[in-house]
Image: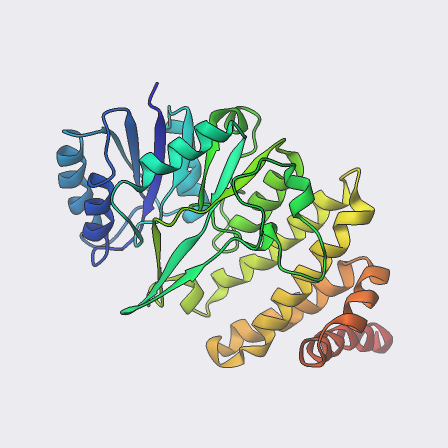
Length: 328
């Protein structure tokens, strides 16, 4: 069994894949496994991966898988999870890269702590600028219950730090069904995933390691494109709400999920210039319907305590459905 499996999906990243693959080589060990998943790229990415898989096999265990059709990041990661054999698992996106030796330090950290999963800080790379993004938890190198890190509702917490590649995960989580993503989600795929992990895993820790470089502002990234695929955030957060509603601690945890959902809706609705006009109309209509599905007492508390800019956006969406119902 490999000590660590690294799942790396690629899609149309010929410009960035060489840097990603070079950094994998600088992290390779004979007991590490790299699972490279091409999500039916249309550019030169598959050719780059074929050459790299052969070269990487000299220093690590390598699996190269190519999808017959494009399925999105969540589906590509699931393909990698199904193929991975490692005792520990982690992720990397096909346009990001790593510091040399980072994975060895990551494995040493999770082995030493003996917990289900660890979370790490990361470096955001925007053009030539670099900044550190930290897990919003002060307790470091200490094992505790992941459920404790979901609250408080009115502050940024670990479930808001939804980067699957910022950490490592013991294989027992995969065996329990906690590491797969919701198949077909095109965006916000990390949100239901991180909530499920924090609700159902038994132990985790935050470690002060820096080694993942997250490339921001990539033109082909869905975060930069205002097309209909971005609306999958609604399906993702509907799943968070429904699964949290069924939790034994729903009374405590659901207000956090509702507040986060509202904040994301307000963020997207405020960024009108980003969206294609027809998609923006869909965004408003579907967001208004989502607001009506939320527990209304908790929604009222959110609207009373959220800042004026965001709460006014949400109140207008709420009135839109109310007015439509009255007219009908």
